[in-house]
Amino acid sequence: MGKIVCDRTRTALSLLGVSIGIFTVTVVQMAVGALRRGIEESLDSFGRDVLIVDRIPMEPETDDDGNVRWWQYASRPDITLAEYRYLHKAFEGRVSLAYVANLGDGAIAGVDGHWRIAVPQAIDSGRAFTSAEIAEGRAVALIGADFPAEKITRGRIRIEGHSAEVIGRMERAGLMQISMVDTDRAIILPAAFARRLLLWDETGARILIQPRADDACAPAVNENDIRQVLRSSRRLSPEQRDDFSINRMSRLAEEFEDILRTVNRTGWIIGIFSLIVGAIGIANILFVSVRERTAEIGLKMAIGAPRRRILREFLIEAIAYSCAGGTIGLLAAALTGLVIPSDLIRIELTLSHTLQSLLLAVIIGISAGLAPAITASRMQPVRALTSI
Image (tube, rainbow, N blue to C red; front, top):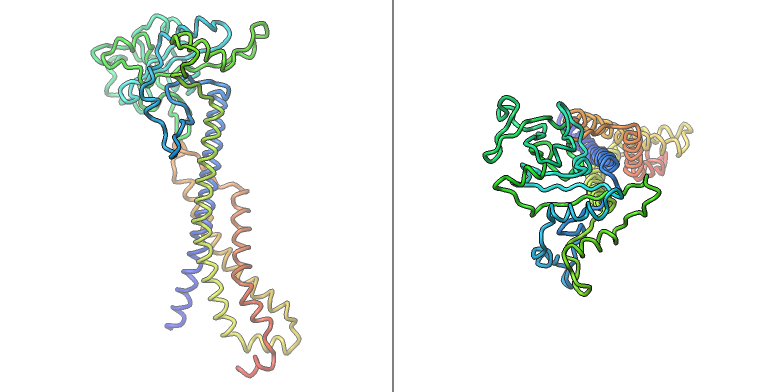
Protein backbone atom coordinates (compact mmCIF):
# COMPACT_ATOMS: atom_id res chain seq x y z
CA MET A 1 0.00 0.00 0.00
CA GLY A 2 2.84 2.37 0.93
CA LYS A 3 4.51 1.72 -2.45
CA ILE A 4 1.34 2.56 -4.35
CA VAL A 5 0.89 5.79 -2.38
CA CYS A 6 4.54 6.65 -2.94
CA ASP A 7 4.23 6.05 -6.73
CA ARG A 8 1.06 8.11 -6.88
CA THR A 9 2.70 10.93 -4.97
CA ARG A 10 5.77 10.83 -7.21
CA THR A 11 3.58 10.83 -10.33
CA ALA A 12 1.42 13.68 -9.04
CA LEU A 13 4.46 15.81 -8.23
CA SER A 14 5.96 15.14 -11.67
CA LEU A 15 2.73 16.07 -13.42
CA LEU A 16 2.47 19.15 -11.21
CA GLY A 17 5.90 20.33 -12.35
CA VAL A 18 4.93 19.95 -16.01
CA SER A 19 1.52 21.54 -15.37
CA ILE A 20 3.03 24.59 -13.66
CA GLY A 21 5.58 24.99 -16.44
CA ILE A 22 3.02 24.73 -19.25
CA PHE A 23 0.60 26.96 -17.31
CA THR A 24 3.26 29.66 -16.79
CA VAL A 25 4.47 29.64 -20.38
CA THR A 26 0.92 29.61 -21.79
CA VAL A 27 -0.45 32.34 -19.52
CA VAL A 28 2.54 34.57 -20.25
CA GLN A 29 2.06 34.00 -23.99
CA MET A 30 -1.66 34.77 -23.65
CA ALA A 31 -1.01 37.91 -21.59
CA VAL A 32 1.77 39.19 -23.84
CA GLY A 33 -0.40 38.57 -26.90
CA ALA A 34 -3.32 40.43 -25.32
CA LEU A 35 -1.10 43.32 -24.23
CA ARG A 36 0.52 43.58 -27.65
CA ARG A 37 -2.89 43.48 -29.33
CA GLY A 38 -4.23 46.15 -26.97
CA ILE A 39 -1.21 48.38 -27.51
CA GLU A 40 -1.45 48.03 -31.29
CA GLU A 41 -5.15 48.92 -31.25
CA SER A 42 -4.55 51.86 -28.91
CA LEU A 43 -1.69 53.22 -30.99
CA ASP A 44 -3.79 52.90 -34.14
CA SER A 45 -6.65 54.85 -32.53
CA PHE A 46 -4.27 57.37 -30.94
CA GLY A 47 -2.16 57.89 -34.04
CA ARG A 48 1.40 56.64 -34.50
CA ASP A 49 2.46 59.87 -36.20
CA VAL A 50 1.47 62.06 -33.23
CA LEU A 51 4.22 64.24 -31.75
CA ILE A 52 4.09 65.13 -28.05
CA VAL A 53 5.67 68.34 -26.76
CA ASP A 54 6.63 67.71 -23.13
CA ARG A 55 9.15 68.78 -20.51
CA ILE A 56 10.77 65.34 -20.31
CA PRO A 57 11.86 63.09 -23.20
CA MET A 58 10.83 59.45 -23.42
CA GLU A 59 14.54 58.62 -23.48
CA PRO A 60 16.14 60.86 -20.83
CA GLU A 61 19.86 61.54 -21.12
CA THR A 62 22.21 59.86 -18.63
CA ASP A 63 25.58 60.83 -17.20
CA ASP A 64 28.76 58.76 -17.40
CA ASP A 65 27.56 56.58 -14.49
CA GLY A 66 24.25 55.79 -16.18
CA ASN A 67 22.17 58.05 -13.93
CA VAL A 68 19.35 60.02 -15.52
CA ARG A 69 19.98 63.76 -15.61
CA TRP A 70 16.79 64.65 -13.74
CA TRP A 71 18.24 67.96 -12.61
CA GLN A 72 18.48 68.94 -16.27
CA TYR A 73 14.71 68.51 -16.70
CA ALA A 74 13.54 69.78 -13.30
CA SER A 75 14.53 73.35 -14.19
CA ARG A 76 12.69 73.34 -17.50
CA PRO A 77 9.64 75.62 -17.79
CA ASP A 78 6.18 74.08 -18.08
CA ILE A 79 4.43 73.63 -21.39
CA THR A 80 1.76 76.35 -21.40
CA LEU A 81 -1.60 77.04 -22.96
CA ALA A 82 -0.09 80.21 -24.43
CA GLU A 83 2.54 78.12 -26.24
CA TYR A 84 -0.17 75.85 -27.58
CA ARG A 85 -1.93 78.91 -29.00
CA TYR A 86 1.38 80.16 -30.43
CA LEU A 87 1.89 76.85 -32.24
CA HIS A 88 -1.72 76.83 -33.37
CA LYS A 89 -1.28 80.25 -34.98
CA ALA A 90 2.04 79.26 -36.58
CA PHE A 91 0.74 76.04 -38.13
CA GLU A 92 -2.93 76.88 -38.57
CA GLY A 93 -4.54 74.54 -41.10
CA ARG A 94 -1.40 72.43 -41.50
CA VAL A 95 -1.60 70.28 -38.35
CA SER A 96 -4.14 69.23 -35.74
CA LEU A 97 -3.14 70.36 -32.25
CA ALA A 98 -4.42 69.40 -28.81
CA TYR A 99 -3.55 70.72 -25.37
CA VAL A 100 -4.02 68.70 -22.19
CA ALA A 101 -3.12 69.50 -18.57
CA ASN A 102 -3.69 67.03 -15.74
CA LEU A 103 -4.63 68.65 -12.41
CA GLY A 104 -4.98 67.26 -8.92
CA ASP A 105 -2.93 64.12 -9.52
CA GLY A 106 -4.84 63.39 -12.71
CA ALA A 107 -8.30 63.69 -11.12
CA ILE A 108 -9.13 66.65 -13.38
CA ALA A 109 -7.94 67.39 -16.91
CA GLY A 110 -8.18 70.56 -18.96
CA VAL A 111 -8.19 70.16 -22.75
CA ASP A 112 -8.18 72.47 -25.75
CA GLY A 113 -8.11 72.24 -29.53
CA HIS A 114 -8.49 68.84 -31.21
CA TRP A 115 -8.71 67.22 -27.78
CA ARG A 116 -9.73 63.85 -29.22
CA ILE A 117 -6.08 63.34 -30.19
CA ALA A 118 -5.28 63.29 -26.46
CA VAL A 119 -8.44 61.42 -25.40
CA PRO A 120 -9.43 58.91 -28.12
CA GLN A 121 -11.82 56.88 -25.94
CA ALA A 122 -15.44 56.63 -27.06
CA ILE A 123 -18.34 58.30 -25.26
CA ASP A 124 -20.50 55.76 -23.43
CA SER A 125 -23.45 58.09 -22.84
CA GLY A 126 -24.23 61.71 -23.57
CA ARG A 127 -22.08 63.67 -26.00
CA ALA A 128 -18.62 65.15 -26.49
CA PHE A 129 -17.53 68.79 -26.27
CA THR A 130 -18.43 71.10 -29.12
CA SER A 131 -15.77 73.38 -30.60
CA ALA A 132 -17.63 76.39 -29.17
CA GLU A 133 -17.61 74.93 -25.65
CA ILE A 134 -13.86 74.36 -25.89
CA ALA A 135 -13.09 77.79 -27.36
CA GLU A 136 -15.32 79.72 -24.93
CA GLY A 137 -14.39 77.69 -21.86
CA ARG A 138 -17.96 76.87 -20.92
CA ALA A 139 -18.74 75.13 -17.63
CA VAL A 140 -19.27 71.64 -19.06
CA ALA A 141 -17.62 68.35 -18.12
CA LEU A 142 -17.07 64.81 -19.29
CA ILE A 143 -16.66 62.21 -16.54
CA GLY A 144 -14.88 58.86 -16.45
CA ALA A 145 -16.51 55.45 -16.20
CA ASP A 146 -15.60 55.15 -12.50
CA PHE A 147 -16.72 58.63 -11.46
CA PRO A 148 -19.16 58.25 -8.51
CA ALA A 149 -22.76 58.83 -9.58
CA GLU A 150 -23.63 60.22 -6.12
CA LYS A 151 -21.44 63.26 -6.77
CA ILE A 152 -23.72 64.32 -9.63
CA THR A 153 -26.71 66.47 -8.62
CA ARG A 154 -29.31 67.29 -11.25
CA GLY A 155 -26.80 66.69 -13.99
CA ARG A 156 -24.14 68.97 -12.47
CA ILE A 157 -20.99 68.55 -10.38
CA ARG A 158 -19.10 70.91 -8.07
CA ILE A 159 -15.40 71.45 -8.76
CA GLU A 160 -13.35 73.76 -6.56
CA GLY A 161 -16.34 75.99 -5.89
CA HIS A 162 -17.45 76.00 -9.53
CA SER A 163 -20.45 74.19 -10.99
CA ALA A 164 -20.25 72.34 -14.31
CA GLU A 165 -22.87 70.53 -16.38
CA VAL A 166 -22.10 66.85 -17.01
CA ILE A 167 -22.65 66.34 -20.73
CA GLY A 168 -21.28 62.80 -21.11
CA ARG A 169 -19.57 59.78 -19.58
CA MET A 170 -16.55 58.08 -21.18
CA GLU A 171 -16.39 54.37 -21.92
CA ARG A 172 -14.16 52.29 -19.65
CA ALA A 173 -10.65 52.55 -21.04
CA GLY A 174 -9.28 49.26 -19.77
CA LEU A 175 -5.72 48.34 -18.93
CA MET A 176 -3.97 49.02 -22.21
CA GLN A 177 -5.84 52.03 -23.56
CA ILE A 178 -3.33 54.77 -24.37
CA SER A 179 -4.47 58.24 -23.39
CA MET A 180 -3.05 61.43 -21.96
CA VAL A 181 -5.85 61.38 -19.37
CA ASP A 182 -6.98 58.76 -16.86
CA THR A 183 -10.42 58.68 -18.42
CA ASP A 184 -11.75 56.01 -16.05
CA ARG A 185 -11.73 58.36 -13.06
CA ALA A 186 -11.01 61.89 -14.30
CA ILE A 187 -13.21 64.90 -14.90
CA ILE A 188 -12.41 66.42 -18.30
CA LEU A 189 -13.01 70.16 -18.72
CA PRO A 190 -12.32 72.78 -21.38
CA ALA A 191 -8.90 74.23 -20.49
CA ALA A 192 -10.23 77.80 -20.54
CA PHE A 193 -12.68 76.79 -17.80
CA ALA A 194 -10.20 74.59 -15.89
CA ARG A 195 -7.73 77.45 -15.56
CA ARG A 196 -10.23 79.27 -13.31
CA LEU A 197 -9.81 76.54 -10.69
CA LEU A 198 -7.54 77.22 -7.71
CA LEU A 199 -5.54 74.05 -8.41
CA TRP A 200 -4.74 75.09 -12.00
CA ASP A 201 -1.18 74.02 -12.68
CA GLU A 202 0.58 73.34 -15.98
CA THR A 203 3.32 71.11 -14.55
CA GLY A 204 1.96 68.06 -16.38
CA ALA A 205 0.77 69.89 -19.50
CA ARG A 206 1.48 68.57 -23.00
CA ILE A 207 0.83 69.64 -26.56
CA LEU A 208 -0.06 66.94 -29.09
CA ILE A 209 0.55 67.57 -32.77
CA GLN A 210 -0.76 65.41 -35.60
CA PRO A 211 0.34 66.35 -39.14
CA ARG A 212 -2.43 66.47 -41.73
CA ALA A 213 -1.58 64.12 -44.56
CA ASP A 214 -4.59 65.13 -46.67
CA ASP A 215 -3.36 68.65 -47.44
CA ALA A 216 -1.40 68.44 -50.71
CA CYS A 217 -1.03 72.21 -51.09
CA ALA A 218 0.67 73.12 -47.81
CA PRO A 219 4.16 71.72 -47.06
CA ALA A 220 4.30 68.99 -44.43
CA VAL A 221 5.19 70.06 -40.90
CA ASN A 222 8.07 68.10 -39.45
CA GLU A 223 9.69 67.86 -36.04
CA ASN A 224 12.33 70.46 -36.88
CA ASP A 225 9.65 73.01 -37.85
CA ILE A 226 7.96 72.57 -34.48
CA ARG A 227 11.28 72.86 -32.66
CA GLN A 228 12.12 76.14 -34.39
CA VAL A 229 8.72 77.67 -33.55
CA LEU A 230 8.97 76.61 -29.91
CA ARG A 231 12.51 77.98 -29.62
CA SER A 232 11.27 81.25 -31.09
CA SER A 233 8.37 81.30 -28.63
CA ARG A 234 10.77 80.82 -25.72
CA ARG A 235 13.33 83.25 -27.17
CA LEU A 236 16.18 80.76 -27.03
CA SER A 237 19.45 81.89 -28.57
CA PRO A 238 21.23 79.59 -31.07
CA GLU A 239 23.79 78.47 -28.48
CA GLN A 240 21.13 77.53 -25.90
CA ARG A 241 19.88 73.97 -25.72
CA ASP A 242 16.20 73.08 -26.07
CA ASP A 243 14.35 73.35 -22.77
CA PHE A 244 11.54 71.09 -24.02
CA SER A 245 11.25 67.68 -25.64
CA ILE A 246 9.41 66.46 -28.72
CA ASN A 247 8.47 62.80 -28.35
CA ARG A 248 7.07 60.44 -30.96
CA MET A 249 4.24 57.98 -30.31
CA SER A 250 6.10 55.45 -32.45
CA ARG A 251 8.89 55.55 -29.86
CA LEU A 252 6.36 54.71 -27.17
CA ALA A 253 5.42 51.61 -29.16
CA GLU A 254 9.07 50.55 -29.17
CA GLU A 255 9.28 51.06 -25.40
CA PHE A 256 6.21 48.88 -24.89
CA GLU A 257 7.68 46.20 -27.15
CA ASP A 258 10.88 46.14 -25.08
CA ILE A 259 8.81 45.67 -21.91
CA LEU A 260 6.75 42.87 -23.47
CA ARG A 261 9.90 41.07 -24.60
CA THR A 262 11.24 41.24 -21.05
CA VAL A 263 7.97 39.89 -19.61
CA ASN A 264 7.91 37.12 -22.20
CA ARG A 265 11.52 36.16 -21.49
CA THR A 266 10.92 36.10 -17.73
CA GLY A 267 7.84 33.90 -18.14
CA TRP A 268 9.76 31.44 -20.28
CA ILE A 269 12.60 31.25 -17.73
CA ILE A 270 10.17 30.49 -14.89
CA GLY A 271 8.27 28.00 -17.03
CA ILE A 272 11.42 26.20 -18.21
CA PHE A 273 12.60 25.69 -14.62
CA SER A 274 9.23 24.16 -13.71
CA LEU A 275 9.35 21.96 -16.81
CA ILE A 276 12.85 20.76 -15.94
CA VAL A 277 11.62 19.74 -12.49
CA GLY A 278 8.70 17.91 -14.08
CA ALA A 279 10.98 16.23 -16.63
CA ILE A 280 13.29 14.97 -13.89
CA GLY A 281 10.26 13.54 -12.07
CA ILE A 282 9.03 11.76 -15.21
CA ALA A 283 12.52 10.35 -15.84
CA ASN A 284 12.64 8.99 -12.28
CA ILE A 285 9.21 7.36 -12.70
CA LEU A 286 10.34 5.65 -15.91
CA PHE A 287 13.63 4.47 -14.42
CA VAL A 288 11.64 2.86 -11.61
CA SER A 289 9.27 1.40 -14.20
CA VAL A 290 12.20 -0.05 -16.19
CA ARG A 291 13.59 -1.69 -13.07
CA GLU A 292 10.23 -3.15 -12.07
CA ARG A 293 9.46 -4.40 -15.60
CA THR A 294 12.86 -5.88 -16.36
CA ALA A 295 11.48 -9.40 -16.67
CA GLU A 296 8.67 -8.20 -18.92
CA ILE A 297 11.16 -6.42 -21.17
CA GLY A 298 13.35 -9.57 -21.34
CA LEU A 299 10.35 -11.74 -22.24
CA LYS A 300 9.30 -9.37 -25.05
CA MET A 301 12.82 -9.44 -26.47
CA ALA A 302 12.99 -13.22 -26.17
CA ILE A 303 9.88 -13.66 -28.31
CA GLY A 304 11.21 -11.36 -31.00
CA ALA A 305 10.30 -7.77 -30.03
CA PRO A 306 12.87 -5.42 -31.63
CA ARG A 307 14.77 -2.96 -29.47
CA ARG A 308 13.22 0.01 -31.22
CA ARG A 309 9.77 -1.21 -30.10
CA ILE A 310 10.91 -1.20 -26.45
CA LEU A 311 12.40 2.25 -26.99
CA ARG A 312 9.18 3.49 -28.56
CA GLU A 313 6.96 2.12 -25.76
CA PHE A 314 8.82 3.99 -23.03
CA LEU A 315 9.03 7.18 -25.06
CA ILE A 316 5.25 7.04 -25.64
CA GLU A 317 4.73 6.50 -21.92
CA ALA A 318 6.93 9.53 -21.12
CA ILE A 319 5.07 11.66 -23.69
CA ALA A 320 1.74 10.54 -22.20
CA TYR A 321 2.86 11.64 -18.72
CA SER A 322 4.08 14.98 -20.02
CA CYS A 323 0.98 15.65 -22.17
CA ALA A 324 -1.25 14.79 -19.21
CA GLY A 325 0.53 17.45 -17.15
CA GLY A 326 0.45 19.83 -20.11
CA THR A 327 -3.29 19.36 -20.54
CA ILE A 328 -3.86 20.23 -16.88
CA GLY A 329 -1.73 23.35 -17.34
CA LEU A 330 -3.67 24.35 -20.48
CA LEU A 331 -7.01 23.91 -18.69
CA ALA A 332 -5.75 26.07 -15.82
CA ALA A 333 -4.58 28.73 -18.31
CA ALA A 334 -7.95 28.71 -20.09
CA LEU A 335 -9.72 29.07 -16.74
CA THR A 336 -7.45 32.00 -15.86
CA GLY A 337 -8.45 33.70 -19.10
CA LEU A 338 -12.13 33.30 -18.19
CA VAL A 339 -11.67 34.57 -14.62
CA ILE A 340 -9.81 37.81 -15.52
CA PRO A 341 -12.36 40.56 -16.36
CA SER A 342 -12.39 41.32 -20.09
CA ASP A 343 -12.63 45.08 -19.46
CA LEU A 344 -9.31 44.87 -17.61
CA ILE A 345 -7.45 42.82 -20.20
CA ARG A 346 -8.89 40.40 -22.75
CA ILE A 347 -6.76 37.25 -22.72
CA GLU A 348 -7.85 34.05 -24.42
CA LEU A 349 -6.41 30.64 -25.16
CA THR A 350 -5.93 30.39 -28.91
CA LEU A 351 -5.23 27.37 -31.10
CA SER A 352 -1.69 28.65 -31.58
CA HIS A 353 -1.09 28.75 -27.81
CA THR A 354 -2.56 25.25 -27.42
CA LEU A 355 -0.46 23.69 -30.18
CA GLN A 356 2.68 25.42 -28.95
CA SER A 357 2.15 24.20 -25.38
CA LEU A 358 1.36 20.62 -26.45
CA LEU A 359 4.46 20.59 -28.68
CA LEU A 360 6.50 21.78 -25.71
CA ALA A 361 4.97 19.00 -23.57
CA VAL A 362 5.91 16.41 -26.23
CA ILE A 363 9.50 17.73 -26.34
CA ILE A 364 9.72 17.56 -22.53
CA GLY A 365 8.31 14.02 -22.61
CA ILE A 366 10.84 12.86 -25.19
CA SER A 367 13.71 14.54 -23.30
CA ALA A 368 12.61 12.96 -20.00
CA GLY A 369 11.97 9.50 -21.43
CA LEU A 370 14.96 9.14 -23.72
CA ALA A 371 17.48 7.93 -21.11
CA PRO A 372 15.12 5.36 -19.46
CA ALA A 373 13.96 4.15 -22.90
CA ILE A 374 17.53 3.65 -24.11
CA THR A 375 18.35 1.81 -20.88
CA ALA A 376 15.37 -0.53 -21.41
CA SER A 377 16.13 -1.15 -25.09
CA ARG A 378 19.77 -2.11 -24.40
CA MET A 379 18.94 -4.85 -21.89
CA GLN A 380 20.23 -8.33 -22.63
CA PRO A 381 17.23 -10.70 -22.90
CA VAL A 382 18.88 -13.60 -21.03
CA ARG A 383 19.99 -11.41 -18.13
CA ALA A 384 16.58 -9.69 -17.99
CA LEU A 385 14.77 -13.08 -17.91
CA THR A 386 16.84 -14.26 -14.95
CA SER A 387 15.16 -11.56 -12.82
CA ILE A 388 11.81 -13.43 -13.01
